Length: 229
Image 1 (spheres, rainbow, N blue to C red):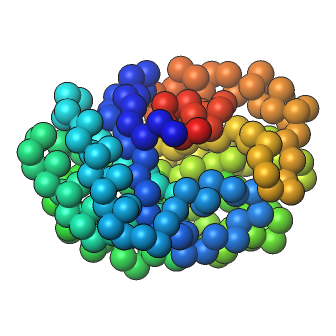
Image 2 (cartoon, rainbow, N blue to C red; image 1 turned 45 degrees about the horizontal axis):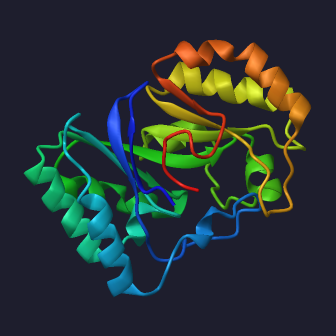
Image 3 (cartoon, one colour; image 1 turned 180 degrees about the vertical axis):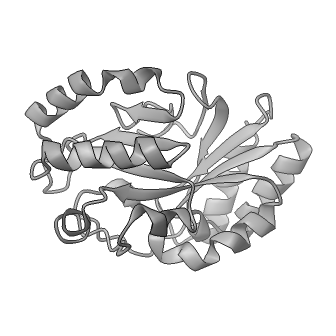
């Protein structure tokens, strides 16, 4: 499992994959990523501290991810991240959270005391697809609801059951209303959700221009940021 890397094509930054407590929701129909968690706090902190030793501060930007939300990281790990930010003169942070923590987002911004780009797993702005098919439990109505708390939606494309019209609408919303977004092209995993190769081929052709858009990071593989397994 690679837990430290550098993202050097867009939004240049260091990135660490840490270990946290189980995801507060943990029932998304497409996700098997949440298996990388623990309830053993001392072991989590030991691993996380070792991973954070790799951070050099060379780009002044750090992204911290885990198999859930940043609020599920142990308190000692959060304190260590803050320590590293000060020691390495980090000026900007990327974090991610589930919608259910929306009312705690400002607390995390206040805690770290530097600008944060807060990501959220939206997957799709189609309400029924997101909450019924994907079982996301993110019951916001519009992109304006997201922007009250978060900065950067993480979208998903290439799932059987998803339509081209859904994706077109999602891309329109993202491109016209957000300064940063991540597009995840679905890869088959241990869940029952399956990849739609035709939709993926169509997306790669129609939206190839996103590869050159500095605001949009497209992940064609789960490990394109250099962390994970």
